[in-house]
Every structure is written in C-alpha cells, then in structure tokens.
Image (tube, helix red, strand yellow):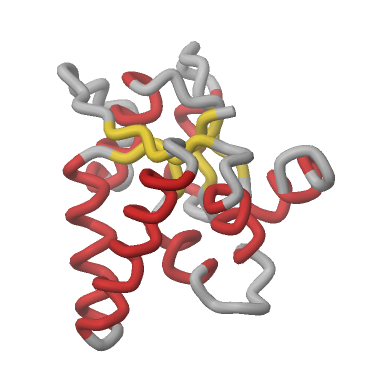
Length: 141
C-alpha cells in the first residue's frame, strides 16, 4: 500500500505516544510505502522549522533516510502534471499531485480541504489518520 502523508499527520505523529505515531512506525517497518515529492518535503521542512528547533527537521530527514536504506519504501515522486483539484487551499495540491502520480492508495490527512479528491475519480482517496489506523490495524499499522 502506498500513502501520501499530510504535514499535519507527520508533524503530530513524530511524538512517541501520539495516536498517529503508529503510521510512521508502519513506514519504518516497511509495511507501507510513503510517497513524497520535492514540494512535499519543502512543506514538511517549512512547517517543522517554523514550529520547532532545527534539529527536528534534521531528525525527520534521518528517519526518511533510514526508511529508504533499510526498507526501500520511501517513494520519491516527480509529478509532471498539476491536477488543481483542491480550490479551497491550493497549497494542498502538491499532495494530490504526488498521490496521483505515485499511484497512492490514500492521502492520510485531517485536513477537510482534501474532500474534493474523494469525488474526483482518481485512485488516491483522502482518509483521516484515525480512520486509516482503525481500518488497517493489524494489517499495516
């Protein structure tokens, strides 16, 4: 299974004991493929650097490098087309572009702006983190 993980989920899920942490653990364990693009990595970096010390961005980079080296389940996608599905918050479109280009199954997000993707006819669907965890507990997470 391939997923794109929205910034809010990554940001919160880094905390040990946070309910979303098991999603990142599943990536570390190679149970799910985590798709990213340069635009997504840039947003992760901007949000983490704005809210936390520099070392936190470095730590996330190390985590992604670890997943790449040990599991090979970090998928770097270079979307060639902008689908422009999200109108309410255009900054969310790089996540949609990555998910479609990377043939992801889901975009894991708490952001309601992704709702138009559900009816857009593309394979990736938005799913709330707790719904993803409930649906795939014992299988992927």
